[in-house]
Length: 272
Image (cartoon, rainbow, N blue to C red; front, top):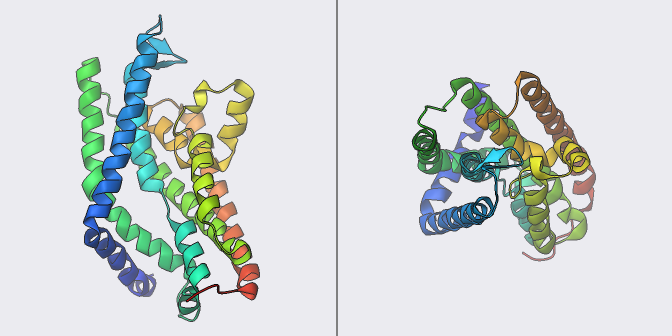
């Protein structure tokens, strides 16, 4: 294990340096996402103000506010750029340099992204969690923070990130066949954002659609960790959700290995 960590530690450091080097890009992206979150907040304020009830589909305005900001945080933590990065390296041929190195191809990407996530945790995670809990205390007059739910949330987020990473690696390997993923990658992000419950809680969906979407891997990326944090799941639901996350993690991990073995036999470089 020590040898393994020593081998991939430089990639983590490279991810951290990348985030610090392109600080303006990092800050602008973060501000754009926060602005989007506040826009959704005011949309839901309008929805609740036009309703005759203090709750909507089992959510109060306090619940919806927490949902929006924790979903933003979770999406930020679990986001993986693997599909675009892998696709670009395949397109320009630089992937050949990774293929000849005595390291695991997916591990180099994983540890590089982990370095980037460390910066996200330092700059984003703590302030948002603190802000959400302060808001809940002011709005309800009671301390709503639950240590057990928070720890289970962290476990769920870690699994969710790994699912996102291997899903995007699988998708990125499709560049071996499609040559360019830029347009389809944008479409993928929009579809996942909807199917994961990041825009509209899955609880708002019709029962049949809710059941289907909850079982699909996309709910594991965002909706599951958020529901655990908010205490919306009982013990049985938490165990089932975590087991489902682990299932999808192994499914995409295995799928990435199979696609890699098949795809590397037909590498075609368009430039570089």
